[in-house]
Length: 361
Image (cartoon, rainbow, N blue to C red; front, side):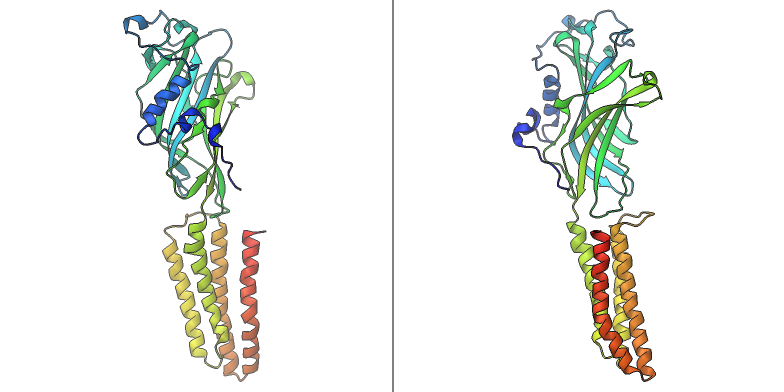
């Protein structure tokens, strides 16, 4: 699968104006927060003019009325690692939350501490450990529109199977849910403007597409007891070239080396047995060397299947060498020569057939 790429003109302002993930991420966050509140510029206001009205911050807006709609967006600043063994990815995220609180409509342009206002309690559904990086402040815009942005860095779970490894493709998902409130109280919506990713990511061995977001509901059997969920997903395709040149190609050469015994006179069984044993020991040493870069799994991947078949072919060449040596020792040299001639074609065809079955069919 070739991951879809967006044109430059379709990218949001924060990507077209070149916000760097290292030196400008905080400036990007501030810009996006401002963009998220109907695009109005915030005038500087004194602490006195931002005096809060009397209200219970524990009560959500529109109590007793319709659900409070909270627009959620995730901007993927970076992914630095995908750990296949731990089933996790390490990332850097900006999470945006926007909602309306009519009680704050007179505070346009004010910047308040998060605990001073009502805010939805949202949590990552993915297990893992992430740490906030920005001070918890909200900005108030027109008609009481409240914007909050937080940066999270750390690891989140990424369950995925590696049956097609190293030619595998996956979908990385991040789920955010409204905690402690049913869908009749808090309804999450998608903030399209702030659902995106940095153009250049650090991770070297994967190609990532552009994110897609949607909202669903999870929980109870009845809608009244369900909770709202924001689902962020992005396609990931592994770069297989490293494994092609570092694993597959050396392995094919080792297997081909074991076939050299079929061109050695079976009467000279010493060199035949020596070459077969050398090929087998080389393959075993190669597998030990590769153990540190291959995922340790309880099931077979495509690469595991290929390694297993290659081992069987090398061992098969050793068995043929022993067989032809025995035939020569009992004066059946003609049969031994005929067997070698058959194996010169049978073994390469078997390897090609196995590769077709494993990687194509």
